[in-house]
Length: 392
Length: 137
Image (cartoon, rainbow over all chains, first blue to last red; front, side, top):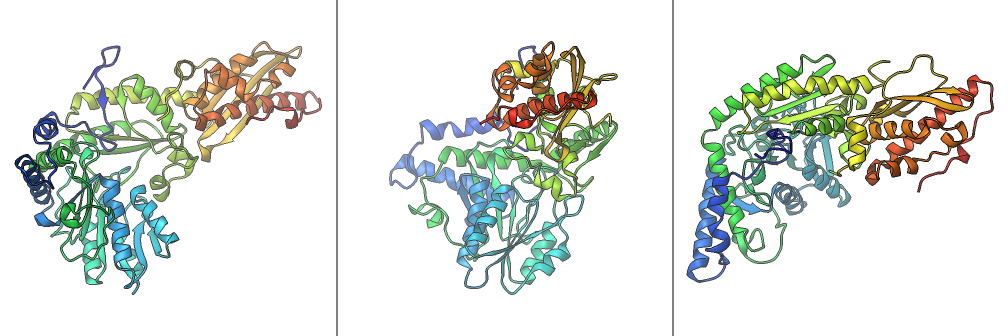
């Protein structure tokens, strides 16, 4: 990572937003830009190289989630995978029913397709979550009607890191003959994911969240799931997803997911130790609360709210110390509304504005954590000294 | 994310006139914590002139920078001239604000007006009307 003008090393703790592409992944991709550039649909030798590379990558993605190789379809990323899964299942099964179940804290790539489907005549139930961001499995069961065709619940939340009871929800879906989709964009590379064991019918993943390239993703579709196509055109991906394959991207996605899942237990253990050091250190600051579940959370996610101050101000000051992080405050979005996730967990608006998300990655060290812990208390104190709420 | 001008960053990182004021002659507080913005402005007024101005703000970088710049712009001005400091004047002095942050400069203008009227009320003077104010957009 580069240094800033003052020579301070960049401490990047926004891996839930995106990761750098692993140089080894880039190396694996390079030949498919220049040397093996052939269109996989063409009949000559260099095209065959591209086609083989895609199938090798497909196998790697399938292995990472314990799926059958022919159930993995490459897409342009998590958003396309979510759109395809939700809209594709909805329209292919509308003769069976028009009801979809999801949660209030999904990523917008799930919520907005659901809202759009409501305009097309579908009914959507947005289940509430508890203060930790957990959806209640009994609520899922109770929400199912004879019209329900799809349940879509994220594997782990992108803001607060809470891990949902995926296996149990999958079981309920299966018992009721309803398809189950999960947006696992944040979970891959952080926790083990097994589509067979966890009763998952459809799963979205995105390459740039685990040191793969941006613009790459995949949708797992269990064999037999009735789903319409989303991208219409050529016969690529067994006529399921049209468009000339992003061969270098797919190669990078395969390389990245293999690397990130090969030693996931040790990686998770290391991240969790850094995470808890960070959480415990930050909670020593007065009027500070942890968002999300204390233990059932992604090993790399820290989300803290600081009362009386606003998140964008915290980010700007952190940036001056070369620390990159994120917030759920309204002030980094175009609306005046703070994060729907924090509000969904029952946080009052004025407190939700003061959130700070630090998401760790493999290059982060204990030194980085201690540097952040040395900087944040001063920033909070400085901003609180300006805040009329702190002195009221 | 929209980047701020150098001037905004300067006034955010090194805010002028930040803090509370002992025995102010006028105080104005605007904004709403639910929306993530509260601005409180304190004025010290002698002979119809703003001798000192201070602020306390809960909000984003643009809100803090707008507060800082607003206090700088009104210090030394007559109440009439201070009243005429528009949100656009605050934004211009900051070398511009991203369009979604313009409401922060509006808050600064409103805080000045509220603080001046608070002073006028305490002096048993008639309140100045918001209709005199230059509305943005």
